[in-house]
Length: 117
Image (cartoon, rainbow, N blue to C red; front, side):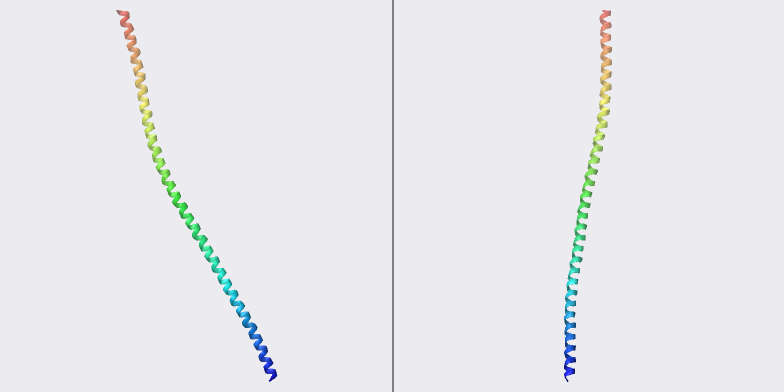
């Protein structure tokens, strides 16, 4: 009987040690699952943050492209105005040169008239 009680005591001690080890393993598993969940959540958060930043930068890039296109259109309009002004300036210069030639001709005619009179 004493042997059986001693055997049962040893089995009880062994079962108790296994029970405690199982609880420790369960706690370790819970801690690992919790840590893994935190890491996954952090990685998801970082990905969402990065995606949001990329989306904002893409929107800013699109706005900048629209501004550049508007500026290019404005530059093209200014170049058209500039070329019109250059043409008008050339015409005015030519008209001024013609006016100078006419004035010289009038002066020559006036001198000839004075010499004839």
